[in-house]
Image (cartoon, rainbow, N blue to C red):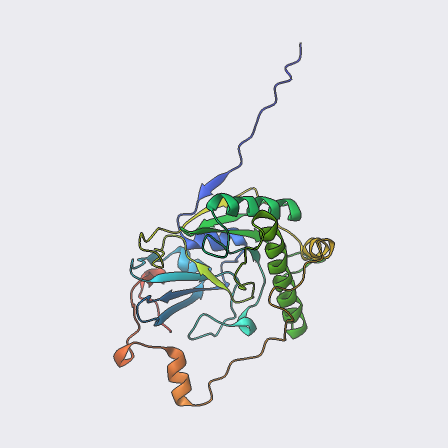
Length: 288
């Protein structure tokens, strides 16, 4: 007599040991530039790192507990010397993400955040590849496919504008689903090319209990194609979150004073941190 009992194969969901694991799961290539941004919660001064992924994988990251640390969700162009990079510096769009907070006027519980993630998963037909828990919310990530018929590379400014519109529309889809789960709840308008989000392994200093930011990776999650994303947004009639989308423009300092203010260095020109990233065994060049 045949045995009709099916074998359940568990999904391989593992905890990310570093932000490099998250970047790799999102599809960053070894030579692509990844960005980290540290913000002093007291002074709001910033310190940033811009290195190829392979250097972060070989680095010792010593993250101070008293800063808020964020990572760039998309690769940046080579040649950036300071800052986290802006929209015009993004070279590929590797991920969709949702930023779901538990706070007044937004979602009411982590359970509601998980319900939103489930509904987004059903809409896309694909599970998130990364799920970050910030201590007061969730940030799911879906990897974007890069194929001949549906590339995620930004070749020119028309590509950049098209991706900017798609991300804004995805933000509109997130808002739709949040409203289904918790009518009247609002989300932050953060669905942009150069977005930075809370880094796994860091402390969320926004709250008194200072929770640790954690991440899990689903190694079996498939990637969503640009064409599939567009079809989903059209089917749901998702509109751009925040209204009409404009073409990205470079931000240029108008004089030396503006440039120095843009660097946002602490007194005597010393960055707020100096040793929290050590690629390839050396002290990383710090830019702010």
